[in-house]
Length: 248
View 1 (cartoon, rainbow, N blue to C red):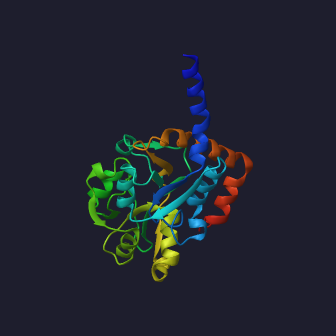
View 2: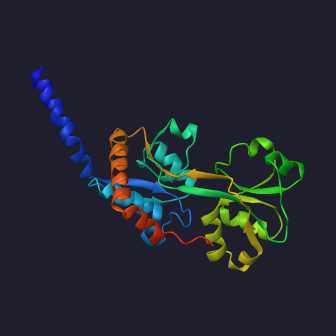
């Protein structure tokens, strides 16, 4: 019995060092300006995740691909997890969620020339307003249940292009994501669009690690400890200030 206890203690002591000796393979999509392959440091979210793991002596490599593929392969533990995603009960069955990284401010974008007011989501449907939604994205609670007039597209850029051309009336999107797309991808339409206040919701992003990988439960604890260290040292806030663009 004593030998077994000793071996168990040794195993527990060695486990973190085994994890630290490996480079973790994480999957990610491009979600400007928060994380993307061609952004400095691959974006603020990527850098927060990278530095939180480094604070625990763990290195990572981020592999970029379309979101649906990144989610699927992470769930199957082809990659140990996703750099960032929003919370969803179905996803939580397959992933460990970290502490929140930071929140996306979800707003309705619209054309400046069109006055829009509504009392609730059902009012949008009653007015016949058309919404441009990106396939696969989680939407604010109650929006889809109100049965709005939906036009589904594959990318954020397509949704904003349809909004600018009058093919839809509203696009729910992260405010910084929308502003980045208008500044960098669709600058010819930037002056035509703005957003409604107040925000629909603040939606936190999280690191997700696959429950199919036996390392994940310990790793999510180590990541959370590293994230706390970043916040306490001031490095977390410095990363956000350096890598996120200012709001307009």
